[in-house]
Image 1: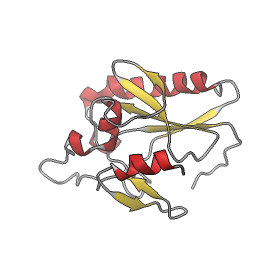
Image 2: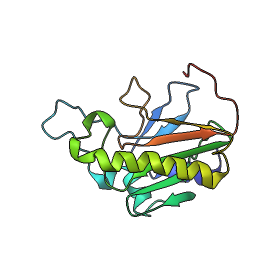
Image 3: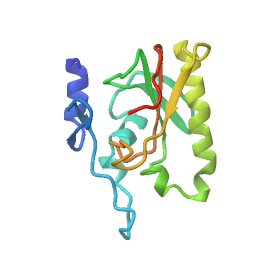
Length: 155
């Protein structure tokens, strides 16, 4: 991980050990879905700050609803994250009114794979949910991975 990536993580609200490899990644605690207000203040959310342009990222796709950018700690030759501009803490906390934006995220994942030149050879789109699902940042996001053979099952 380069100095620029470390600097971005340093500006993040918190760090947590990754379950695989012990890498530190920027995140805040996932909200408790049983709490009265499970939302995270968007000013504390690293992905909201990236979406707004406050934290720089290498953007590969952007429209008025979503942004796709290269992961600072890629797990494949292509590793892009696709996030909505609007804060949704996790898929588990998404509502019926979020159907359109969730579809837009998947279409943007496809557009990002095309933009990066990996659509034809294939790629994987992954949405982690909750701590046991591997979600480290409480903001809905899809990982788009490609550029090498991806084993199954993952994890």
